Image (cartoon, rainbow over all chains, first blue to last red; front, side):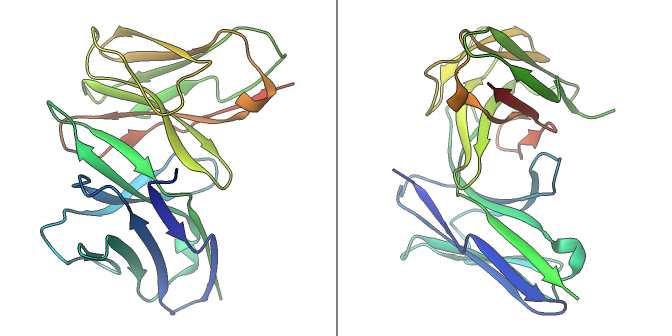
Length: 115
Length: 111
């Protein structure tokens, strides 16, 4: 059972356009929602994260929109650049006793930004 | 030097062989994790450890075992490798509610 569903599987955007990746979760106990970016040959790296007490978080060109009632969250990349071409994973976790994040990942979105 | 180092980076092994993947970190974090990445499936948690005396199963622990030799070292073993364990394996560390830091991965092929 996929607890975090991610779409689309792949995405092609023109340079300067907006990239939008969506995720939906089932477990209402999740309390931390990060997005990870992965380049070929590298491990995932944290891009931006949000807690469910806010509906939006923006860091530079990257924005997370969070809809708690719908159990959905999305990543928006404004002014997409070729250097943004990567695989993006949404994730969710429950704060573990004593802290630490046991992440449940979405299936990933391969983003390609074309010139 | 990388904060999270995995060895080897690539490995081809035969069915039935025992193999160990190693992970070391310089972040000073107590929490360490092993994930497996497969195309179309994302990353799935195999095992995690809060400290040297703590080992916990993740969602796909069957066929795997781990050892936490020290705060900085967490190894993953496949006692008898099978072809469907062919995947990209990642080690990660975190501290309390901070982000997880991933290694560069080990690409394992079981033939």
